[in-house]
Image 1 (tube, helix red, strand yellow):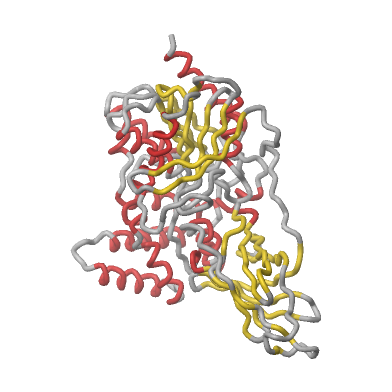
Image 2: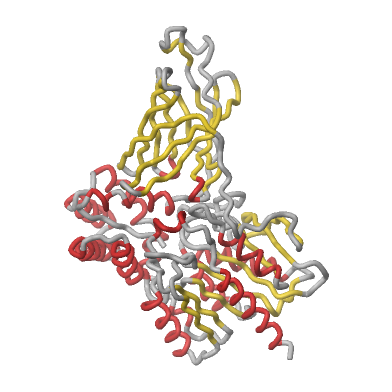
Length: 493
């Protein structure tokens, strides 16, 4: 889930950069060529016709997000012609691989990389003696020093990542999204044999993500699909619209639009001869667990839902609870937590105040953020997110509206260390919504000590995710697989 946070302490101001980098990936843009200038024998910038400085390779560095938390970041710079380069952003621990930057250019001795999709940039100067690029990474008005040195990309492999050859069939596919008519790209893993087999679609959380739901160096959907397919279940996972190899545009898409994408995946599975069309379900994580009930309300043929860390209340209540829980896990002072929550609620109410014009609301939110110490540039940059169709829809969207009336089996999963979607708030709300519609066909598992990604955690704070080697606790994988297989067996009796 995305969250807007702001406090007075410098320690807590730094949270924004890491969080924003996770949240603001609306999609990949095409690569843009830029020119890298040349230098003469004295290290002075020269005309482009002279011998060019070769900056090709993988340039890596580390952003010091807080005194105790850093983020490895790099750029793969590749020559496409004499003095012409393209660059790809790499953030290994967040699963960001080969993310095309908007432009690369050189002005005198400086390298300038623009990443418009992230509202970010890097400006650095090459140091011939140290053979490194010394510069600054800026995102949404916040800046951190970043020194880049030549190195080799490191492939992030976690212990649970499945290794080829797989004991099942894995196929990359494309299918049509309707009603917008673009192609979504994904991977189907299926057991050997003709079937028909039960099948699931994996639906990711908020922010554009690839088919593996790669984040913080983990690939949860790759691990989950492997476990499910080994249990005899067909799994379809796909790149979110406008991201990875999928078409479409995520910039104006709401949760309801993303439900169309998941519905299109269901429709595609129904056409496959090895899939049991009467045993198709959805497994949604975080926002995906909101999308699941929306699809189930629209398509009565769905056989089951698995809600992993799903919310049961509207977005404003989600963010209120989430903000306090994350800051508390990071040991923020209680007065800071109270002030942050109150400020955020004021901002959310302003965003939704339809008695005022959109421009009046934006100006009011801008002034609120500036008054609490946000740099004006950073505050301006936040407005595009806060007033996006996704955010404005999310604030008022109530999952209970879609959970009520469902009569299919539902599995509700959460962890006691989840600071993004807390079990104490959301699990009872989901159960109450199901019961209000007369559905008692649900199974609830709340796992002691597991976080939002279902990892064994100490505090549950998001900044722990990357440092935990386990991607998904094995018991969770076993429970989901067994539950789906049991549904299939019981339905055939």
